[in-house]
Image (cartoon, helix red, strand yellow):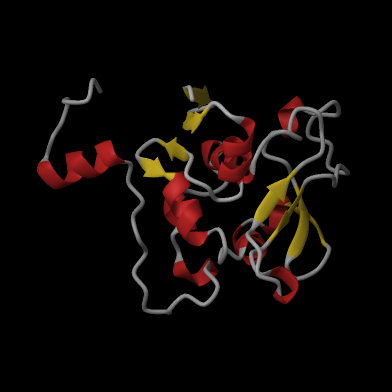
Length: 178
Protein backbone atom coordinates (compact mmCIF):
# COMPACT_ATOMS: atom_id res chain seq x y z
CA UNK A 1 0.00 0.00 0.00
CA UNK A 2 1.16 3.47 -0.81
CA UNK A 3 1.77 5.95 2.05
CA UNK A 4 0.57 9.48 1.47
CA UNK A 5 1.48 12.65 3.29
CA UNK A 6 -0.77 15.67 2.91
CA UNK A 7 -0.18 19.20 4.12
CA UNK A 8 -3.48 20.84 5.04
CA UNK A 9 -3.44 24.39 6.35
CA UNK A 10 -0.45 23.93 8.62
CA UNK A 11 -1.37 20.41 9.76
CA UNK A 12 0.38 17.35 8.37
CA UNK A 13 -1.49 14.10 7.90
CA UNK A 14 0.14 10.80 6.96
CA UNK A 15 -1.96 7.78 6.08
CA UNK A 16 -1.96 4.62 4.05
CA UNK A 17 -3.49 5.39 0.63
CA UNK A 18 -6.67 3.43 1.15
CA UNK A 19 -10.12 4.87 1.88
CA UNK A 20 -10.96 2.29 4.56
CA UNK A 21 -7.81 3.09 6.53
CA UNK A 22 -8.48 6.82 6.16
CA UNK A 23 -12.07 6.36 7.37
CA UNK A 24 -10.86 4.29 10.32
CA UNK A 25 -8.25 6.90 11.14
CA UNK A 26 -10.97 9.55 11.29
CA UNK A 27 -12.67 7.42 13.92
CA UNK A 28 -9.53 7.23 16.05
CA UNK A 29 -7.30 4.90 14.03
CA UNK A 30 -3.53 5.06 13.55
CA UNK A 31 -3.22 7.98 11.14
CA UNK A 32 -0.74 10.56 12.39
CA UNK A 33 -1.86 14.17 12.33
CA UNK A 34 0.49 16.91 13.52
CA UNK A 35 -0.06 20.58 14.34
CA UNK A 36 3.44 21.94 14.66
CA UNK A 37 5.07 19.83 17.40
CA UNK A 38 1.71 18.54 18.70
CA UNK A 39 0.66 15.02 17.69
CA UNK A 40 -3.10 15.45 17.32
CA UNK A 41 -3.43 11.84 16.16
CA UNK A 42 -1.95 10.52 19.43
CA UNK A 43 -4.08 12.93 21.48
CA UNK A 44 -7.20 11.86 19.57
CA UNK A 45 -6.49 8.12 19.97
CA UNK A 46 -6.11 8.56 23.73
CA UNK A 47 -8.86 11.11 24.35
CA UNK A 48 -11.39 10.74 21.53
CA UNK A 49 -13.64 8.60 23.70
CA UNK A 50 -13.57 10.99 26.65
CA UNK A 51 -13.34 14.53 25.23
CA UNK A 52 -16.30 16.64 26.40
CA UNK A 53 -16.09 19.04 23.46
CA UNK A 54 -19.51 20.59 24.17
CA UNK A 55 -18.49 21.62 27.72
CA UNK A 56 -15.13 22.78 26.30
CA UNK A 57 -16.95 25.10 23.86
CA UNK A 58 -19.52 26.36 26.37
CA UNK A 59 -16.83 27.19 28.93
CA UNK A 60 -14.25 28.69 26.55
CA UNK A 61 -15.93 29.71 23.28
CA UNK A 62 -19.57 30.43 24.04
CA UNK A 63 -19.48 33.19 21.40
CA UNK A 64 -18.98 30.47 18.76
CA UNK A 65 -21.99 28.42 19.93
CA UNK A 66 -25.03 29.02 17.72
CA UNK A 67 -27.45 26.75 19.62
CA UNK A 68 -27.34 24.22 22.43
CA UNK A 69 -29.25 21.19 21.09
CA UNK A 70 -28.59 19.11 24.22
CA UNK A 71 -25.92 19.41 26.92
CA UNK A 72 -23.75 17.13 24.75
CA UNK A 73 -24.56 18.44 21.25
CA UNK A 74 -24.09 21.98 19.96
CA UNK A 75 -24.56 23.82 16.69
CA UNK A 76 -21.44 25.95 16.33
CA UNK A 77 -19.61 28.30 14.03
CA UNK A 78 -17.62 26.35 11.45
CA UNK A 79 -13.85 26.94 11.44
CA UNK A 80 -14.03 26.63 7.63
CA UNK A 81 -16.90 29.18 7.32
CA UNK A 82 -14.81 31.44 5.05
CA UNK A 83 -15.26 28.82 2.33
CA UNK A 84 -19.03 28.35 2.72
CA UNK A 85 -21.35 29.66 0.00
CA UNK A 86 -22.66 32.24 2.50
CA UNK A 87 -19.33 32.90 4.19
CA UNK A 88 -19.54 33.61 7.93
CA UNK A 89 -23.35 33.80 7.95
CA UNK A 90 -24.28 34.14 11.66
CA UNK A 91 -27.55 32.28 11.00
CA UNK A 92 -25.74 29.24 9.57
CA UNK A 93 -26.32 26.45 12.08
CA UNK A 94 -25.31 23.45 9.97
CA UNK A 95 -21.98 22.79 11.73
CA UNK A 96 -22.34 20.68 14.86
CA UNK A 97 -20.27 18.88 17.44
CA UNK A 98 -21.06 16.21 19.99
CA UNK A 99 -19.18 15.15 23.10
CA UNK A 100 -17.77 11.69 23.70
CA UNK A 101 -20.13 9.43 25.62
CA UNK A 102 -23.08 11.69 24.69
CA UNK A 103 -26.42 10.61 26.09
CA UNK A 104 -24.69 7.87 28.08
CA UNK A 105 -23.42 6.10 24.94
CA UNK A 106 -19.91 4.71 24.46
CA UNK A 107 -18.97 6.97 21.59
CA UNK A 108 -16.20 9.26 20.42
CA UNK A 109 -16.52 13.03 20.18
CA UNK A 110 -17.33 14.31 16.70
CA UNK A 111 -17.33 17.61 14.82
CA UNK A 112 -18.99 17.82 11.40
CA UNK A 113 -20.34 20.25 8.84
CA UNK A 114 -22.41 19.21 5.78
CA UNK A 115 -21.34 22.12 3.55
CA UNK A 116 -19.62 21.07 0.31
CA UNK A 117 -16.22 22.34 1.44
CA UNK A 118 -16.48 20.53 4.79
CA UNK A 119 -18.41 17.31 4.30
CA UNK A 120 -15.31 15.15 3.70
CA UNK A 121 -13.32 16.59 6.58
CA UNK A 122 -12.83 14.60 9.77
CA UNK A 123 -12.98 15.82 13.33
CA UNK A 124 -9.19 16.21 13.51
CA UNK A 125 -9.26 18.63 10.57
CA UNK A 126 -11.87 20.75 12.37
CA UNK A 127 -9.74 20.78 15.53
CA UNK A 128 -6.60 21.64 13.53
CA UNK A 129 -8.37 24.48 11.70
CA UNK A 130 -9.75 25.87 14.98
CA UNK A 131 -6.23 25.83 16.47
CA UNK A 132 -4.87 27.54 13.36
CA UNK A 133 -7.60 30.20 13.70
CA UNK A 134 -6.56 30.62 17.37
CA UNK A 135 -9.92 29.60 18.81
CA UNK A 136 -7.91 27.55 21.32
CA UNK A 137 -4.46 26.03 21.68
CA UNK A 138 -3.22 22.45 21.64
CA UNK A 139 -2.43 22.96 25.33
CA UNK A 140 -6.13 23.67 25.97
CA UNK A 141 -7.00 20.25 24.52
CA UNK A 142 -4.91 18.60 27.25
CA UNK A 143 -6.83 20.20 30.14
CA UNK A 144 -8.19 17.26 32.22
CA UNK A 145 -11.27 19.39 33.04
CA UNK A 146 -12.68 18.41 29.64
CA UNK A 147 -11.78 14.73 29.73
CA UNK A 148 -14.64 12.57 30.99
CA UNK A 149 -13.68 10.42 33.99
CA UNK A 150 -10.26 12.09 34.26
CA UNK A 151 -8.63 12.14 37.65
CA UNK A 152 -8.75 15.82 38.73
CA UNK A 153 -5.11 15.57 39.78
CA UNK A 154 -4.10 14.11 36.40
CA UNK A 155 -1.26 16.08 34.85
CA UNK A 156 -1.90 17.49 31.40
CA UNK A 157 -0.04 15.12 29.09
CA UNK A 158 2.11 16.47 26.29
CA UNK A 159 1.56 14.90 22.89
CA UNK A 160 4.77 15.75 21.10
CA UNK A 161 5.63 14.48 17.64
CA UNK A 162 8.57 12.05 17.64
CA UNK A 163 10.91 14.76 16.26
CA UNK A 164 9.80 17.26 18.90
CA UNK A 165 10.19 14.67 21.66
CA UNK A 166 13.73 13.88 20.47
CA UNK A 167 14.61 17.59 20.36
CA UNK A 168 13.27 18.08 23.87
CA UNK A 169 14.79 14.95 25.34
CA UNK A 170 18.22 15.09 23.74
CA UNK A 171 18.56 18.76 22.80
CA UNK A 172 18.76 17.87 19.13
CA UNK A 173 18.29 21.10 17.22
CA UNK A 174 18.54 21.35 13.45
CA UNK A 175 19.08 17.62 12.86
CA UNK A 176 15.77 17.02 11.16
CA UNK A 177 16.09 19.53 8.34
CA UNK A 178 14.27 22.18 10.34
